[in-house]
Image (tube, rainbow, N blue to C red; front, side, top):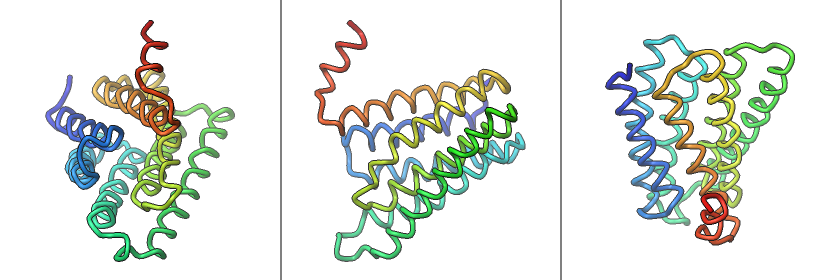
Length: 194
């Protein structure tokens, strides 16, 4: 059964991700939606005791606030050191998440997938919030996060609302990768659907 926290969080996070992936509105709109969506999921995962996902969404809440600050300032006002530190921390978290996925091959537990997905999701948020020239690396990192969390849900938790969120995130993240690769989205859509 879907709770109001799940539904609200899903809708807000999807709206923010759609805005970021498509460029329909300015980035502060996406960051604002992410802030409120992350707040709802922090409350949900604190209640359910899913600490890896709680870490991801609590961290994403802070990072969304930093990202909102970064994206509302003109380039000359952005702290290069803060952006560089955010990108470096995101890179380290991405490596940690990848190592946890590797460790999952030896110790197949829901916690390994939860923490791997959480670390990779947080890493992607840090990369995007850094607003560095490498910020676009967030999209493939998020794809790995989505896949880890989807697998965790299928094999261990059966949380349908979270599954729906992660599947839509996966599609949007793949769309963003296609958009950034320079290939026409219509051509890619026709190949997938036709």
